[in-house]
Structures are given as structure tokens and as C-alpha cells.
Length: 237
Length: 362
Image (cartoon, rainbow over all chains, first blue to last red; front, side):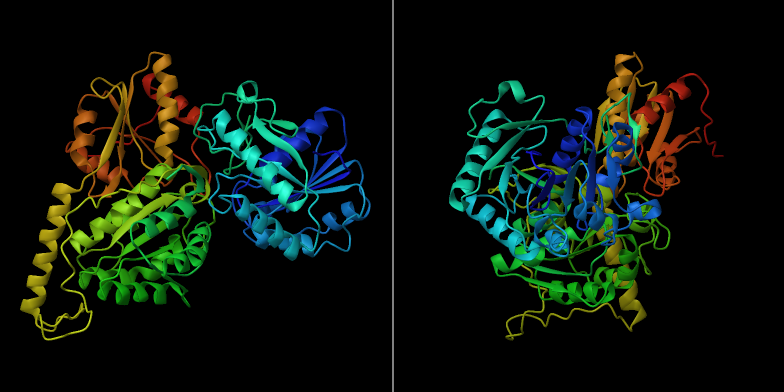
């Protein structure tokens, strides 16, 4: 994952695209890679990549997203800089696309500027979500996204979890279903995302590489002495 | 059924289906659009009907019709949309119709903003619309509780033949948590058949007429007395709350509801580690309000702190609960900003140190 110059994250609503995009961008920046994260989410009104703008700026990640009071707008705003970075990618580029077919439709409007090489288009799958309870649901989601986004998906990311109630079994079973989906669609599972707290207890043979996540997107329930308040939507630590 | 990771809006929608609600009428507004979106695809799977109405006014009147025909029915909206439904909700109360209304509250007044708030407390509990009526108001603090309370709301609405409202701040609509639905869930009330419903007259019972118009003042007076009896029963039987922390000897008792109470609970746990004893009373029903619970815990606490995402609407009920003048400390965030545990910790420490200015009520 994040092996190509441009990484596009698509998938069903609430599958974890934003969490993976933020983690990927921060990991790359920590390795000294110039990275641009474009927030194309026109679906969900809270918990978007743009809410992490302060921590992204601090890490040296360039964020392309609506600015000023439009950060909070529930309007389908796609800023023009998105087209520019896709025409002339500099460093690594990550696109965090909104959920389901309705969110992926935005990608369809960018097909004229999407690079044809050195790009990975990844569907994030969480089999604990009601919209993709099984392999058939995941296959249907991939087909729907390909149809409206007018792109070919190049790989899958397994991200099955139940937040604090995640068990190693849930992660393994999710990876197994992702591999099964990949086999049916002839797509590789490029990574299984695993929360850092779970990394030690998960069976190492998931049939795909692993990607260790920190939880970044979350509501402000827990005490966080190093809280970076990034507005009302969520906090980062 | 295995646990699913659900957005609050999806869980609320699924809870309605699990409760046997096959009809949803609504009009979109952020931050609750995922409720109608979920039900627009889910209801056809169970033979139900979803209608995106032309307005909130139309939606609530569709509920009136469906409930009058004896069906379980729900709508959802966010603050300004609930204001538009107000007249229809009063009609439902007047016609004794069981309807479930979900309000995922956003910041106001006016169009306000799309971020979380608890600014509709007065609206929900005191002044929803014209006429002498009440709605039962349930306030979940988690996605699981939202799913549970929505199912209870249908039973309570049917039992009392009255509108029931479920209120959550925007986070309850938007955040994701694990949720479980229980296949063997039983109704929380014994529910008689809806012989009052307008289901077609076959001369086998008195005519069922659904109406809130009473031309005869004596009849309307009696109707009002009958409604009052019902509200008295709700006040006696339906109060729900939860208590946390050092309820028998608190330095400070916090009164908070919804997701704000979760923030406060984290603060309480951190404060206990510092040796500061804090209790919390969390109203789960905002109406009827848990006056006795607040009074009892507050009586054993040195100081009282109310935390809300409004400028202090719940303080009125806390004052009623106390039954005597006592200083009340208050902390809030507004406009869609959220309270953090650190703010609550700092406020409690300030109260302990005598550095927090309390509000004094004569």
C-alpha cells in the first residue's frame, strides 16, 4: 500500500478510508517523503480528513481540501487544486474519496486527469459494516464503485474491525473474506490494516501484508493530555 | 445477531425496522441524512415503504395518517426540521397517535450549523408546540443505547398512544460504534391490540375516528384531563436515569446527558485518581425528568456542576430538582464545539479550589 505515486482510497461508507489515508500520509511524511493528501469526501459531514489539518500541517503533509468556513460545509466542494496535483503529481499523492458509489462519483469527474500509470486504486473493506456483510456484498460494492467512478480498482485493503471490541479473530476473519473477495475479482489484497494495540496478537499469516494503524479519528470522550484540538469534529493525539 | 460497526444514523434506522416499523417519512437535513438514506434501501427489503416527503410539514402529517391506521411509523430530522414539524406533533398528541420522532440536534438558532449541540432541550421537554401536551423524550449516550431506546420508543408510543422523541446530539448521528440487535427482544410494555385505529369499519366495533378537533368545550376539557392523566402516569412510571461515581459523598456532582455525559465520565475517572470524589447523574429521559435522583445525589454532594452543549437549558430542571436555592456551577460549549474531558477536570478542580463562579438563584 502507498507503493505507487498516486494512491486512491475508495470503498463503502464508514469502511475506514479516512483513517488509512491519514495514517498513510503521516507515515510517509515521517519517512521524509513529500506527500499530498486530497480530501474528496462529499458524503459524510463529520470525521473527514480536513479535520486533521493542523496535525497534517505540523507533519509537513500538504492537505488539499476546502478552506476557511467551508471546512465545515456539508456541500460537495471539490477544490481546483485537486486537478492540478493529479495532472502534475509531485511526491506521493493520496486521494481520500467519499464512501459508496455516491462518494466515488467524484472520482468519475476526475478521470481525465487521473494518471494511467504509477497509480493504485484501492477499495477498503470492513466486513463488520452492515453494507458489506459478506463477500457478495463486497463484490457488489467494488462493481458499483468501478461503474460510477469510471476506474478499474487495482487492489483491496482489509480493514475489518469493531473499534474497541476488535479481536484477533475479527481481523483474521476479515482478512480471509478480503482474500476471498480478491480471488473472485482477481485483485490482490495489498494490506490488512491492524490497530497498533492489536499488532502483537494477530496471526502473522493473514495471506497479505499488514499495515499498522494508529487510531486518529475519534470522538472526544477520553482524557488526552496532549490533545490537539482541531475544532469540534474529532481530536488527534 | 453478530455485532456490527454502525453509524448512529444507521443503527437508529435498523432499530426502527427491528421494532416492526415499516414506514418512514422524512425530509433530508444534516447531520441525520443517513437515517432516511439507510431506510430508503432497508425498508423495501422488509416490504416497508420509504417516502421522501416534500417537506417536514408533509412528513409529520404522513406520520399522523399512518399512525392513525395503526402502523408503527417514524420520522427523523435535525433541529430546524423539528421546528417545522411542531404543529403536526401537537396534532398527533391531540389525536393520541403513537409516533416516533428522532431529533439529531445541530447548533442553532436559525440555520445555525451542522455540528453537534444540545440546544433543543427546551423545545423537546417544555415547548415543542401549541396546546397542553407532552412528549416522552429519550436521550441516548452511545450508539448501542440509541438502538435500544429507539426500539423502546415504539413500545412506549404504542402503550401511551403518544408521540415519543429520541434526541441525540450530532455525534449520536455520525459516530460509529459496535451495535448488537437481539432477535428475541420482547416489548417493554404489554401492548393491547389497536382497536382505536382506523383500519376499515365492518360494523363490528365503534367507529374509529382519528381527530384532534373538539368543538364542544366540555368534551375538549375532558380530553385535556384525560391527556393529563396519561402524562402523570408517564411521570410516575417512565423516569430513566443512570448514576456514576461517588454518589454517596461527592465533592462535586455532575448533571449531564447524551455524549456530554461520556466526556464527563472520563473526567470523573481521572479525578478519582487524583482523590477528588465526583458523582454524576445522567438523565436518560429528559421528560419525565429524574428530579428525585438529582435531588438525592445533590443532597449528599458539596457542589453541583451542570455540563451541556447549550447555554444552560437543563439548569431549570436541576433547580426544580433541588427544591431549595443552591449555587450551581456550569460549563458549556456552543455552536458545534464539544466539551473535552480536560475542560471538565479543570472546572471541577476550580470548583474545589473556590475559583469557579457559581450561579446563584434566589
